[in-house]
Image 1 (tube, rainbow, N blue to C red):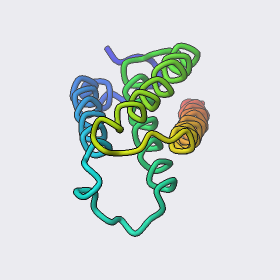
Image 2: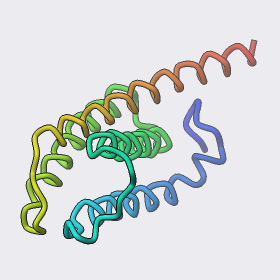
Image 3: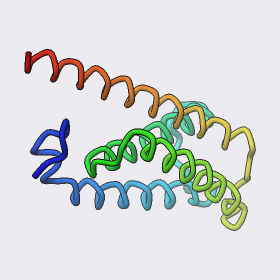
Length: 136
C-alpha cells in the first residue's frame, strides 16, 4: 500500500529508484576521481559542473527518500547529514588520483544541493496542494 501522497507507480518502483541512486553516486564518484588527463572537456566551468552534479545527486536522493515515505523533517535531516560529508570525502580523496581538493568546489557542491532540495520541497508542496484541490 503506497504512502499517502506518493503515486502508486513511484511507490511500487522505489527499490529500482534506490538502486539507480546508488549507481548514480557510484558513477559520480568514478567521474570525480578520473586522472586529470582523462577528464573530458565539457565546455563549462568547473564550479558550474560541481553545482549541476550535486544538484542531480541531491534531487535524486530527495526523490528516493520521498518514494520511501520519509517524513519531510527526516528527509531534510538525512540529506543535510549525508550530502556535505559525501562531498567533503569526494574532495578529500581526489588528491590520491592526482586531482586537487578545493574548498570552493565543496561550496559549489553545497549550492547545488541546496537548490535541488529547495526546488524538490517546493514541488512537493505544489503537488500536495494540487492533489488536495483535485480531491475537493
